[in-house]
Length: 283
Image (cartoon, rainbow, N blue to C red; front, side, top):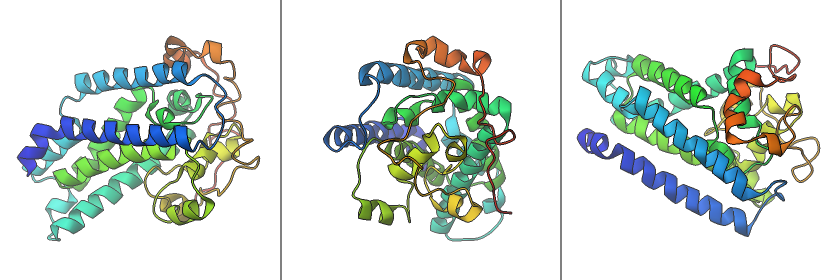
C-alpha cells in the first residue's frame, strides 16, 4: 500500500482537489451566503495563480512532499509512533489529529509573531470570502508550513496513509470552510461539533482584530473551543460583516505582484496578537 501511495500521491491529491473544488464551486453559485463585493473572475485568477506559484515552489524545495517525508521517517524508524505498539488505525488517527493540532498552533503563531503575520496578511487581504480564499497563501508561508509539518512528522512518525489523509483533509476543509455557501442554521450547529464550517471560519476573516484572532482551526473545531479562541458569530452578522484587513481596502492595488509583495511593503495594522489584537488562550 505504501508503494502505491508513493507512486500515485500527486494524482490522488489532484483528484480530490479538483473534485472538492468543483462541488464547492457549484454550491457557491446555487446557495451563496453573501453577495461578493468584487468581481469573481479577477480574484480567482489571482488566487489560483498563487496556487500555481506555491505548487512550483513546493516541488522545487520539497520534491518529496509531506508523504515522502513520512516514508523516509518510517524507513528509518524515527518518531514516537515507531516506538510504541498500537493498532494501525489508532496510529493513523493519532497522526491526523496531531498534525491538525500542529497546524492550529502554527496558525496562531502566524497571528502572534509580527514578521510571520506579514506573510499571513496575503491570506487575509482578500476582500471577499470564497473557496479560493482557502488556497491563497504566500509562497514563503507555504514553505514555512511544510517545514513545520516535516518537523512534526519526524517527531511523531505517523503512517504514510495518515499523512496523505491529513493533506487531503487540510486542502478539502480549507476550501469548504472558506466557501461562500449558506448552510441551514440547524445543519451548521451540528457540523460545528465535528468540523469547521464556513460560518465559523468566516468570523476569522473579519476586519475587527478581536474577531480575526479567533477560530484558527481548519479541520477540527475543538482546538478553538478547548483553548479559548472560539467565537460563535461576528458582531455585525454574516451578511453585514466586512471581510479583509483595514489597511488594504482598494482592490485595484491588490494585483498579483502587489499581493506577493505585501509582506515586504504593507502595514501590519493592529492585528498581530503581540500588539493590540490580543487573544486569550487557556493554559
